[in-house]
Length: 118
Image 1: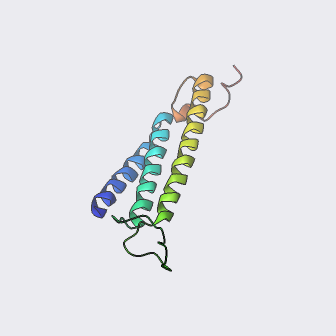
Image 2: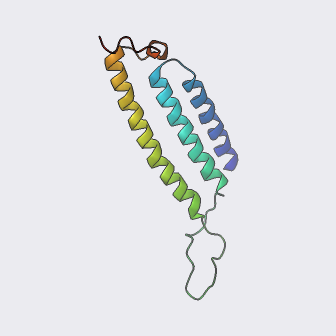
């Protein structure tokens, strides 16, 4: 299972970098989404995948008994998902405004501000 997640993480990272290096602004947004999902899978994989019970200390014990799920990677991934959606929403609005003012999604057309006042 860990090997499969490592392969999927590598594929998502590769696809994300490839998409970011393209000239279309839409592909850059998709590439950033792919890299965000790859980072989430990486955190999930590094956090030790266990098929256990929740990380609660039962009554009468002083520590958690094995096997238990580590709650820290889960909390980090949930936070990263929320931040990723916020960044993607901001980029989509930014793309929409740029497309309205320039009329193209090509990043090479966005290197000047001469067209903004016209």
